[in-house]
Image (cartoon, rainbow, N blue to C red; front, side, top):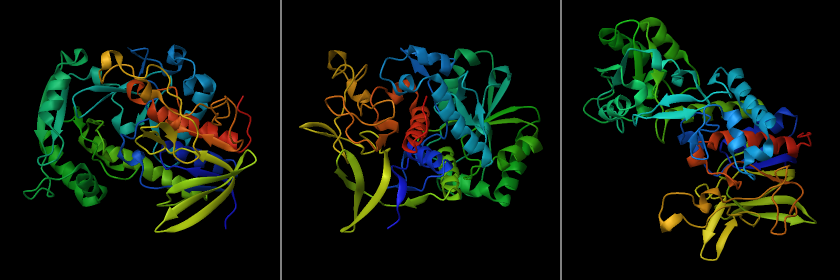
Length: 417
């Protein structure tokens, strides 16, 4: 059996970041993954803090001061928030996929719903900071592309105050993929991975787009975490091209996952797929091993330190039963900050369940009901943590990256001060 310094449970952004950070410190790392995870279906952007106290945040670092006590960012502090995000940004740059943006300013990224989404660090092909300077914005339409409604995009953008004085137009770009059937964004992205697909798109765009324009299109410029297709099209057409953010499943999220998987393999991290962790074996205040069960066979994985990044209720890290809330592997108590229900019994508004999770100490070790550390060598990261609502704050990937990095630092014994 392979002896691990650090064993990580969970293959979302928090688990991947934790594994990379621990391996970068020289630790022997194994990551247990029960499936693809939400990272592959997300937008591939690092939302740090879009809203705080119900108000838009322009500067994410300054916006940390608006967050309540117990929020993971407040526990980390501005310097460590910046450190975790800089680590992820460096990984992306080293693997040929640098991210655009700054921790001192949110960008507004156009979406396929016709809205502008605040985000902090985004792929270069999605950075639309200069859109406000464009007089004419052209929307690229791909006939037969499923779940892409150009009329919705146009109406939404035209109604925005930032776009009131702009002229919008559409251009139709057909593909050999259609052939009378619907196609997905992934179909088109696979097609544009190859030279033939790129040459075809270039030739057809040149017919309908004059140089010097501003083009919006869905995120379909290849499945790989590279900017080759985007850079070639901008250069050859002489236009500014921006890929819009799309809802799950988005090709741009899969690009980021592919990059991180390659980075993990380069660092020598062992990844165990379809590893469904059922229980933990603990003794004398420490975890000794976790057990997985697959096709009726139980496997034990031992380690010196453990990081759980198994997500919230949707990811399976947290459970809800008529008897109450719980954590699925160790049985840690779940804290539910804030009101237990929305005001007036409605579905919208503040609701404690969206901020539920594990309460941890400064080293991200889960605490028991009495406020003491349960297991000295277990750390938690990502959406399993209590104290924040990623969907309202637009902070999910930011918290995942920061706490994954911090949990790894704690696990390898680095000073978190």
